[in-house]
Image (cartoon, rainbow, N blue to C red; front, side, top):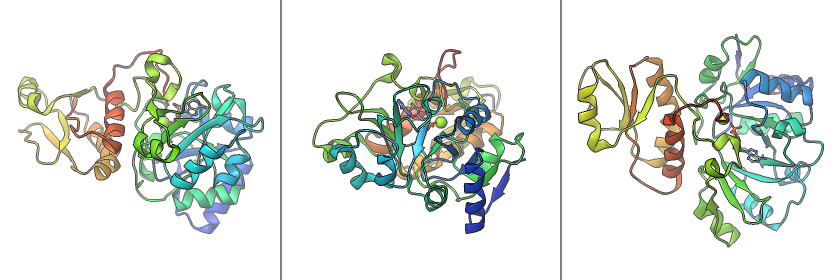
Length: 331
Ligand code: AMP
Ligand code: MG
């Protein structure tokens, strides 16, 4: 069984020591929970990939305390990177730049680049500080499954793993994975939308930043179509089609929809808030709750609002409902 720890200074010190010995620790960030390891240790990185069953080509984000630690992790930290760090760090933005050789090639699927991010969660910061160097960490879920937003979610994902320490930092504030911005290419591009939006980035960089359509162009494995999926078959249904769609269902289904949506028995409504930040924060835990009731299907009424976190949420919903196929990279 994994061990859930209250994140006092003794637990942080114990976890930092475990990381130094080349083992994994689950920790909270403001986006989702992560599974951390020493970015410079091949053995530690291998443990994380094995625990997650993550395809070796899917790169990990290196978590740093600040710009100073980022400069020891990447090459070519320039004025753009510094402006972004000043504006959004600590926070939900990962920046891709060429990696220093100390960062294991295996932690980035053999790439010459690495994504760096300074998380805002105080427990994440305390752990990085106690460890004293970058921590590579993917989301703390089995590959292809929904990212965890609480310590209990992580424990459920790794229920069969002995002795995995999980630092309990409470429910994640953002609830969706970070924005991933690639600064290593000629034009900066967002590979994964998140709480830091393309408008935010364009404003700070003083140049338009676009979302890179990676599943057609193959740049970033974790952004492939089938991803973040519940066990149950999940489908997007427009609000206007919901009643007709439910009428066809003979067994009870779970409906994830904005609060107030009419859902007749025997089907069950899992309501989501109508505010973007509250919606994002609750999305994954709601998917998990709906999945746990083992319904015949999960029907999701996607938000119709656009911009910012709504776009990031819709992006994850598209992946949660995409057909799985063997070649899709997962995270
Ligand atoms: P996760 O660790 O589950 O949050 O996934 C991290 C995702 O960030 C990966 O699946 C990639 O899509 C993206 N990413 C991280 N590092 C890189 C990199 N060096 N190059 C391209 N994409 C990256
Ligand atoms: Mg992930």
